Amino acid sequence: MSEADKPLNFIDHIIEEDLANGFEKRHLRFRFPPEPNGYLHIGHASSICLNFGLGLRYDAPVNLRFDDTNPVKEEQEFVDAIKKDVEWLGYHWDTVRYASDYFQQLYDWALLLIERGKAYVDSQSSDIMASQKGTPTEPGIAGPYRSRSISENLKLFEAMKRGEFAEGSHVLRAKIDMAAPNMLMRDPIMYRILHKAHHRTGTDWCIYPMYDWTHGESDYIEQVSHSLCTLEFAMHRELYDWFLDQVYDSQKIRPKQREFARRNLSHTVVSKRKLLKLVEEGKVTGWDDPRMPTISGLRRRGYTPESIKNFAATIGIAKRENLIDVSLLEFHVREDLNKIAPRVMGVLDPIKIIIVNYPEGEVEWLEAENNPENEAAGSREVPFSREIYIERDDFKEEADKKFFRLKLEGEVRLKNGYIIRAVSCKKNDSGDIVEIQCTYDPKSKSGSGTDESLRKVKGTLHWVSVNHAIEAEVRLYDRLFNDENPDAHKAKDFMEFINPDSLQVISGYLEPSLKNAKPGDFFQFQRLGYFCVDPDTTSKKLVFNRTVGLRDSWAKLQEKT
Image (cartoon, rainbow, N blue to C red):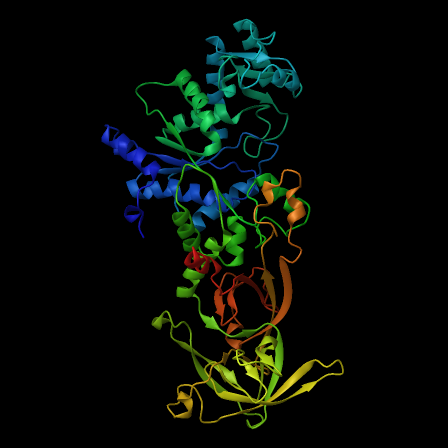
């Protein structure tokens, strides 16, 4: 579905109303402004799709802007990862911008505010300033430095810039209203001292602007028409507008901030601080661990750009926050991969079958469809021989009538192959079944056109030839957290809900067509789920990640509701 064909959300209606009231379409410009202090996650996908989707709908430019005002947490690694993720999703920005590009302009404007008596240097501790803020029902108290002279403020602020003071000794505050109902308007901090090297500006600066001062002014410099933020910034809009009022030129476009609700995903967390904790404490292997809700992690797990964009389109843009079941995300990747993933056979918990009446040493190559959903995908040949592996769960020595897989004296069809009958089984000293003896019907070969080939049996099993199977490491991923909403428990740390079984590493046996599979390739292992090749793969070792199982729990849930 193209952006133009998608139904309008409330943000679209705001823009349509602006256009109807005379705003010129050629002045539309949007931006996606991540802070480079971590990797993008699934929560960012909605914002990415919203802003870049608006660009496509209105043929308007979209900036990728890094709000890099905190050198303590920001790194070039995160900048590079964010660019890669946005491009992988299929979006293209007009220009790459950085808040640090505007440090000089922001500083010059700050001097202007001081000269107009609208900003001052406060030399109190952060604790004392916080105590003077008041409460939502009580006004704040003016500190002793609020009445400093303009000349003294200018002198101190310039000395702050030169690095003459220690961190925490002074801040620059906007001089607004200590009794304002909105506590964010009670003389917010504009600059703090940080003697830290910046990933782009190095040690050129030792004072850094705060987000609220930087954000709106950056939008204004870039002439962004609509600044779209998540709902937690709704209370910041008044301050956003106040800062714009101080520099606004009526001959230029004035940005308009509007807010939409953040969507949280079940069985995970999307706070960068909490994701960083998972990485630093070794609960995951890194930001791109396939259990992480990061876009990098989802990509490594085998998610496709279309599945993430379709997920974002389904949950939509709303005004209220809610928790989205992760099974909806799984539904979308399953739906996309069903159309494009080649079908192959692999056995993850093998038990050997010997077809006792099949000629020893003989090998047949059976034709198999690559994807029944796509005729153009063609077919491949898979080897069949006397000894094959099937899944251990696909055989029972004794079973009731509802078990349609292999059992003693029972028949099943081998996918693309023959009908076999189990006649006996061997056990080890512990009583575990280690081998099954079967017979096959030579006339029952799939697609051979004989009456026997058309004979119906209730079970069809996947399999691989023992002598041709490729051994691979298979990583089976599950929910990272046992709890649906690990953030919701105030009395407990979210780390307490980590699922100890979120990763199982096993050896699987795969058909030989997968020998040359490359990292990023995805497949449907028939009857098992969707898998992709992990970057850890080498010329000597194949590694596969399970993206998602075949069962569609979300669709079934929708049928019940």
